[in-house]
Length: 252
Image (cartoon, rainbow, N blue to C red; front, side):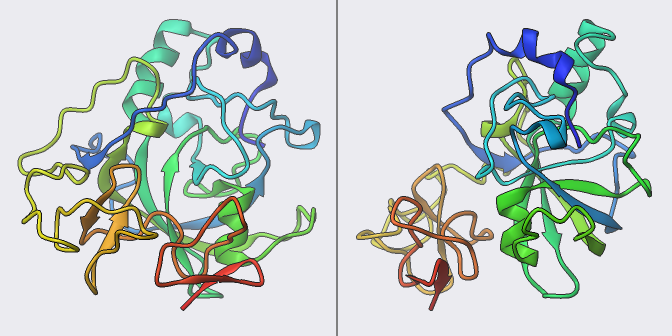
């Protein structure tokens, strides 16, 4: 249960970010440095059982399909819009959008996820425990089918040092570190399928070993972040070629 319903009156007027980039940044000092491990629970974006209403602590609308997770609210400063609006703005702009690789040690599956909410500390059992949005949780662990006792024990996660501006808080400014524009096409060769080449993951493909990075549409040597092998898929959520959607899962 990451979000507080009392935030809804404020965030309803904030638009969801649509222009995004992924690049290297300086992670705030002392904020979950190095590998982390805790309990990985799951939640849905808008349901009374999870105390959510489709509005993120980060200040925008979110959905079950968003690859976001929520670390401890206290670890990010503890402010909400209702408790201290100015502190809340500072804290959401400082942490929301940071990227982490999250792994279920039982299945061995991992996925890049982004801080897109805060975890109510009444439910945080260990300091590094996180709440994971349902679709991303299902991708690495399997569908919990509504069972709140279905958790990832010893979930492993580590910040990558990148930010995804799609999940950053409104008004946030993330200066890139030197040489760190993970979503830019300017540094690549520009050749067909090569590093930095334009792609769409369907008809314009990348060379072996590269992935078509979303939302930038360029071939990258960074981790796959959409339509990857093992991810959920459907007619409206395609796989990145050469993977195909087989029984709702992207498979080679």
